[in-house]
Length: 120
Image 1 (tube, one colour):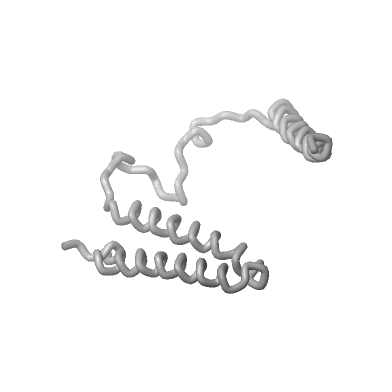
Image 2 (cartoon, rainbow, N blue to C red):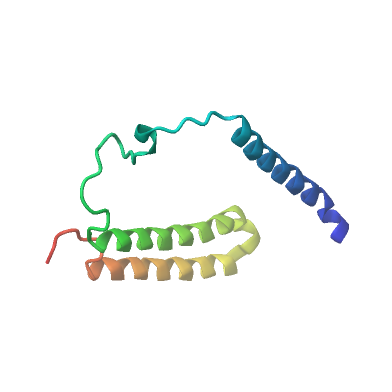
């Protein structure tokens, strides 16, 4: 029913009001001291040298995408594990097929050499 969502809306407005109020108040009350040293880029105490657009290996992106892919698949396993008894034998078979597909994908990326770091 629509009236069941009223507490959620009230809480959302309270949270948004708190965030907006906090940001506005700290903007006006916070110190404003600008100097050349404060406006410089800072990265782990190392001076920035050269161009930040230098190319690097695509392997970093590949590993990140594979991590997200398999991480999301693990998220799908959590509700199944929580409701294992409710789903019964049919749910077990479906999850077994799902896990076999995940395993097949994992074996495929290993055979393709996607996780190897050496340059060939």
